Image 1 (tube, protein in one colour):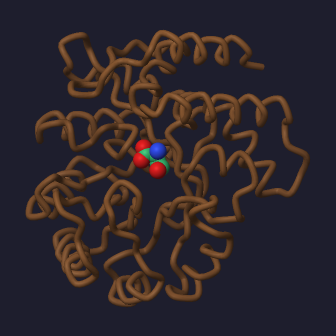
Image 2 (image 1 turned 90 degrees about the horizontal axis):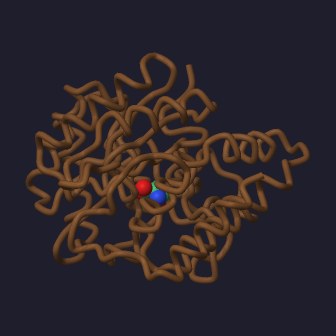
Length: 295
Ligand SMILES: N[C@@H](CC=O)C(=O)O
């Protein structure tokens, strides 16, 4: 049996109707397409899915839609962070009731947490969903907390987490981080995020976590499979994904850009909820130009 949180993990946006409610049919279609293209798992309601912007009923409906769309073909995971850390265990329980195969938890808080608080949070969530795999969603730039290999090792040893999603090596994250995480937390599943780095030259890892893979699954699957097999990559797919990743990053508004990208690629969605503001016209034109070059 494949371990949880391995392979290519697609993080769909949550498509929206014009009134801002989740467009569940569009979400189901996105999940179905990604799974049919061969992604190894789907995570809803994390960053790309704007999980913390939805109320409980909306989140439950999003999870159920994704689970139904994936069926038995691929595991569905859900981001269960909440603006109130006290609600995180309840959100994890709700996701499990709706059928997820594991939960993805970021140490989300109004003020950055410290090691003791993060340890307590993950232990509480693990106790709330015994036996359910939990992935530590490390988001140091945005949350002001960067998990150490040592804390991860303690959380893995007591069964609170089985996997970690870490930003791929960049200028601010020197190479060697994957090895450090493995050394600190033996046996843990190490996954990386950051499309430009993944498609570019990220260190080998057990998983890739990416929002873009939900929108361009065929290309991403081709690149991931070739990378894992050590075979020749589809150069056109790789170059195009790199260009898309750069165009999204250049906007400085990743969620808004992913919604715009989704629209350009045929998924109906309104822009993200307030207070995320629209892309500039120039950014919209740049994205459309890249999409027009899809191989
Ligand atoms: N962008 C993804 C996964 C990587 O960080 C998300 O939606 O959370």
